[in-house]
Length: 375
Image (cartoon, rainbow, N blue to C red; front, side, top):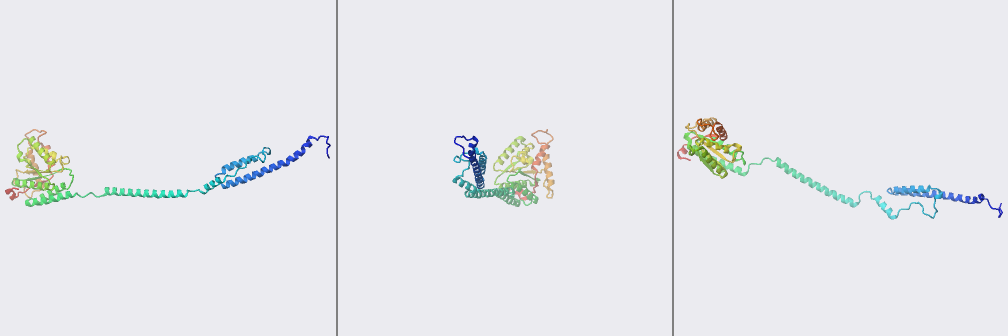
């Protein structure tokens, strides 16, 4: 039924067509938003499966798009305006992401460098092990090697000494076998030590009948030893100093021994020890004091003539001979007429002297030819 032109239409009836026309548009807009949302979700899923590293930003964008899609239809802008749909990454970024995904392990260059470094490091370790092994072998050989044999010069000295002693023995055929064997052992031990701890000494003794023989024999033994050392011999005659001032004789003996031992005379023969002034013999403390002696590469021979004995029996044991010499020297050196003083001989001082010079005491038998003709 048509209305007359003159009659106005009610408001309600006038708005009805507009509302009818608006309803389909709103529905279309809602469907359009749902389609956009579906497309966005599909793209987001595709990007997540393609690049794990870019997943977080895409999720954020998806959430933003979802929130935009959940807005009311009235907030939706016109189709010509900008949308919240995420943009596809450029081709260069896709290629970069693809390269990052492909290169998971080290590159070929890095692998080659690592191989060369490993070979070089292995070579250095091997070299270090070889050097350490060589050093260990040297140290082990140094500490475990046996003591070195005596030097050639030591053997030469001993050989020369033994040859010279054979010559001396040939000149004194009447002497005991013990004299030669014991003296050779005693002196050879000192010669074969490059740095002896103490000097070596011995005492030759005889009765009155063998006085000249004893003197010549002492010279022969001293010469054999000094020849091995390529040196000379100092001789001190005790009989020529008998009755002299004890202190003066002591100083004289000290001066001579010191000069000889510091020079080329490491051997000294003190003839007729019993004739020296008793106090002067204390000087031998300095030169015969074992490890405390002033000179250790030296040899001192003392001769003692037993004035109470014509001859020492050949069958007498060496221990008895030693007692005879000890008793005779005490009788000569100890005097009860004088008070004890620091510069005079007493029993204690004599005991110290005797212990330093009595290492080996050997009796000498008379040689008729030498007693008649001399050395």
